[in-house]
Length: 395
Image 1 (cartoon, rainbow, N blue to C red):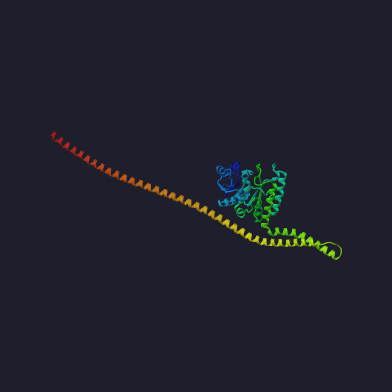
Image 2: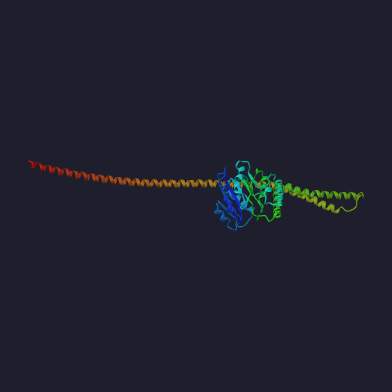
């Protein structure tokens, strides 16, 4: 099982080294841990520092495209790299690396497909009471919109299985946190939250104040909820228009009847006009909801097709990696065969040289033996002559 930890970063040269240095490289149940840094157009050398401190991969945006785009770039890259589990963490070291094993444990055990780290916001001392209240209200709204039970909906410390990552696709240009939870809830993914501890962080550069954050997140919630529940969304709006419209029409009818019975005086024209317009707008809004619901059905088909296409691309990428690995093994084996053949050729050459030397040695030995035999024969002949010469003298 392969875990890839992705870190979106924008001008985080001060903290990125500390983040990378604290990432665990060995986790129970995981075969390999790799780190992917998404440099969102940094101008302070964040990418170079990341490489120096052990980042396995660095993906760079040409310009600053925002946190949501960096998150989606990381998900796409991690899937292409063969990740079975993807962890997203911040580059400001808000989330300690020691918490990563806790985050991925529910996915490893098969309990969850999507895990979110719960910062337990109400216990964080450096959060102001206003921020805590806004977090509580916002998380309650997201829980209602998504049908989930996530206490900390804007936590960026998350883990996704490959299946969950394949089904996630960020469309907002602000922050992925809320949209992803609504997507996961509407797509029926198994979501689990785990309590985590955090480090103190610097002031956010993504959110320009609490109200700006609330405004943009509210827009994201409405847009995402309307995408997945268009009929409900437009029905709520239609109902909000219909009720005052009907009340005004009832008031106009009361005035009309009262005038006929000489009970009341006055005109009902304004009530009749405004009430009629509101009822017509309500009807039009409801019809738009029906049309949007049909379009939503087609969108679900497109989502399923996109999921299958992405899954096929990842499976092809996995297959390409396997084939490449096998080819490398074959090339290595061929190299070994070539080395063996070269060794055999070298040994055969040496054997031939030894045989040649042995033949030469045998020939020389035979020549020496022949010479020795001749010399022995000469010596024997000389001894015979000496012996013959010595016998006459004795007589």
